[in-house]
Length: 149
Image: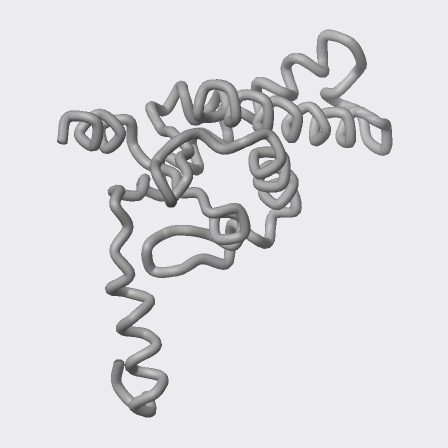
């Protein structure tokens, strides 16, 4: 790292070389999964209340609440939200590779809904929401190859 003090350079090297036992998912697939999740939640909410062409109503909060609920429940039961499953991604615990428990899953979903934590991330593509709960988002192939070893 050019122009950095030796302490800063060694801290950067540690962050970059911190090897995860998984290949992390690409940003493109993560964003696509988020869009699929949000649009599907928007569609479900629109079945019960006006969503499109309205402003200032409760539909935005209801959609956000459904997003958090859907993401938390599906992540702890099947390993990823609807959008992540559709994009062939899984959310795993860093320590052991299993599914997240319900509390970690809910905390992760709430942090994603706050928007800022996913935008602050490490070189290994893990955002603050992943670091806070000890999770990692991986492509499905990485999960399969890990089980074969």
